[in-house]
Image (cartoon, rainbow, N blue to C red; front, top):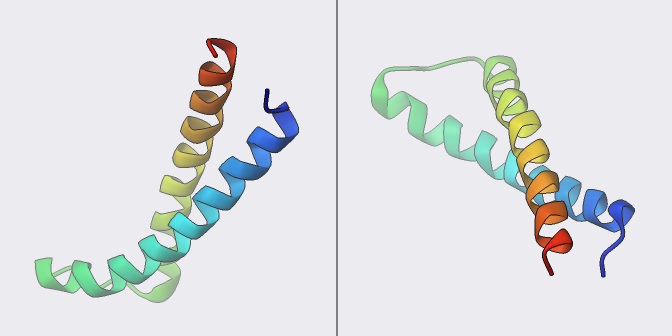
Length: 68
């Protein structure tokens, strides 16, 4: 069984990698749709999704551990 601490570490690592990938993807994809935000704006947009993703990832991990 995975501890809550390890679940949190896994979720943070997963979301951190996802955040970096999201920023790179946004920099490439947003201009295709005529949206060219500054790097700081890209990072803020990514941070909003990071918070949502972190919560989702942690809660799902705990749910799966409970029903394991």
